[in-house]
Image (cartoon, helix red, strand yellow):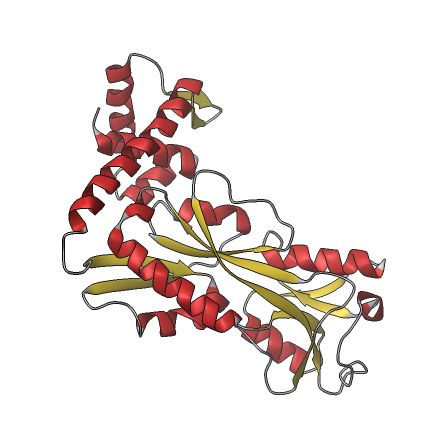
Length: 296
């Protein structure tokens, strides 16, 4: 079996279809379909089936995709065994992060990567459910999830980086601005500036609202924390802002929450095969060290 066809089959599963898989593999949809068809002929069983206008893997396809991961990991380990005899790992590593983590990590990460390693950065701010899919085209994906959220699943390797508290941002002239902390009950009736549904901080706001016993009154949905902070400073509502990666701004006071765990977990996600590459591991080590400095 062709390892490239096995990788294509995995991409069809993780991306949810042929067209999306073609995008991450830089192939045409017809090329993806052809590779999967050849693979099906090689193994002698159907690997995909039609569902409405889309395509999904059959049980045999799922089993082969699982086995394909083991093949990819073994191949990368074999390459890493040879790379270990080089003086230092060399190559290009693609790293992505959601917007606020990109601001927090990427400038400092680029300043400390080993000589001979090129890091290509991208900002990828997607809904929580879409972070795992990014690992098909990006070596290290910096993702976030709210406290108490489920795992990322067993198809990616997860390296925890840090837990970042989320504080309530209020204008400096707000009735609560002079306090050291704030309880959710004190926020009942406030106008909230929140992120879009499906993003991790929206889940945290729901937990804060539940602890207050009232539904949050969301007046604006803004994913850019700088914009949200500006709206808070101008008196147009309160918001949840990440302590390390934003830290407030002029005209804004950050208040830690009591009575509810309000935070997000920042993790590095990698495909298990790419996690075996020495050059990827060298960048991941620097990212972990940087996170430890920030957390400390």
